[in-house]
Length: 259
Picture (cartoon, rainbow, N blue to C red):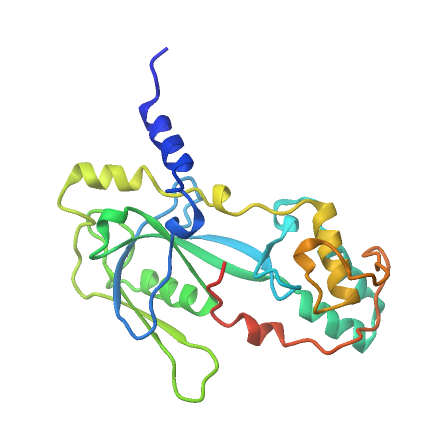
């Protein structure tokens, strides 16, 4: 049987740390305009980008991938359902804090950094909507097409007095190929990072420990799965009270890029 050289290269990259999340993720810098070319994920039901749902601001965890989106048992979703069925204002407000938020992902080649290959860009709802509007504009169409697509300009600015920076995107007016080198195009389109290798949900038991720790002490080191001596609260019970106020998850999430 012939040796699969591509598989060996991927394994070498994995062992050498080249496939670590920090190396494969791209984030635009504030105050600097970046130009990127977006690619489409293969085998994605005709959708160019992928969506993942995360729980945010639960303890010290920047983002917890929801098992529920994959059809798997999810103690946090179970708690949300029970809180909503409790039909009290307190339960409703707590459930709102736990609602998962969507992050969208697109493969990108960053102009000027082509030597780093294809990376993944994670963005929020606003940027996602703007990119879809561009693609639905008859002047642009499929901006991810390797031969006749469009580069995208990305700007991140923070207005005085604003807590969070804002990301804007716009397509360059002229269509260009992804690369003049056809072999390089084949290499890039054949080596789009697999999201499944970068993000995976925690086990049911681990998530249950994390949510129990957060419920009993919002300032606890939830990632350790402990509650600092406080009695655990089963996620199978309806929780109607919270000892301390929580930050608004919608505000805390705004264009979060700390995954």
